[in-house]
Image (cartoon, rainbow, N blue to C red; front, side, top):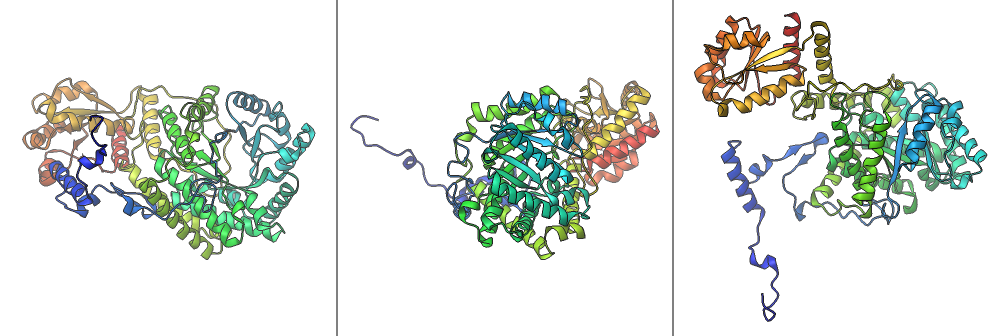
Length: 627
């Protein structure tokens, strides 16, 4: 372009594209892949992904899919941020959790964290944590006027709160400068324990704490609206949000009934949500939570200044695995990033070994440094609502908010959160959701890296000192790896008693190009159950398979090849394996029209993408253990 030539916008050189053109391109790709012959909108729908709560993720979003305007940061409906500046000034609050029962050890880890990047302390007190009487020792050396303290004291919340307030006074730090949350959560405690014998008294005690904080320590929040019990019981994102709204409304009723104004009542609540490795769903959940609570506050008559939800995001325990726990570092990194992008004011990244027991110093260091990298090196907090304006994120936020509001209305229609917990309505709903997700996990439609996909059987186990048992009796606590953990434990027991893991012989048939894909699939599948895979360096056939099978030391086998090779060799090889003593023969792939032929030759089961992997592996272990 010369100095004399006019400026030409780059877009002018390209024709406008429309959705129909894109759909035609999709049609071509689907035809070549053999997935479907669908056309137009049906072709686009073939690429969609179904989430929980009836939400469907489409492959393409345009301006036509945008939701209602999300407003501005710091203004109702607070979708974009609870404050106009978001977290751009000082970043979000890096909050580490401590679950030691020994006050001395708790103090050591608390001080180490505060000296190395953590800005607030989340301390378990009472049942499952340091005793209330040990709170002073646990916080020895902590500058209470600088570091916020958050308590998780269960039924002991009143005594723990009184002790912390005493420590503030004894330290000489003005109560007016205290920050944190006293952690009173009677409805969350009901969800955890199922015991409502003292619920009325606990609600009254929480209200008194809120009144005292309002009058003496406006930087302290008395109540935590903890949605983690519902997430950890298997609830979906919308169910987590809906129950948090119902809990928050229940507390507003209690606080205003005790004489607090609606604005002061709103300011006494801190909401706690789970952050998962599904980054966009987490971002949308936190944005939707602020929008929903702003609507509740508006209906209750709160001023806009008091309607912004204070959020504490915690990386999910449900997603944490016990096998190959190192992968948890990656999961928590994505979850922490999502929490920051979603606008949480405080973020807790759980140590990667938290599912195994008490985290060690290295794990706590990695957890806090994960946030330091996000804040200091990635500058993630320097942008307000980075996901804002994305048609996908705005649409997902809107759909999630609507689904959550519908669930909230169901709970309110049943008499509110306490009534819905007592009746079993919430437990039943969460159990149904988890059962559907369990099926997805079993069929590996929701893969777990290092567990159901790409397991590493030779990985030395990671051992940690046992952590205090969490309070129970109410809603269950689930983990994504539960079913596979049971399978791996059976393999471990077999190893301990026999000196070797259960084995399966992989019979690769035909040329490399014909068996590689299904050989890799079968190895991945069986190893997910703790079953060691054994194979020959080259392919086998009906004449050589018996000798190769005998050398493997296995009692079961799996055929691996293309459909074409199966048609030529599978029946003969299966028959040879059975003659050689194989107690079970699997075939990797769907049988199609040749099921009867293969079954008659000795194939006992067919394993393929989408099969119930947990059932296949459990059945395989049954045979191997008997053998």
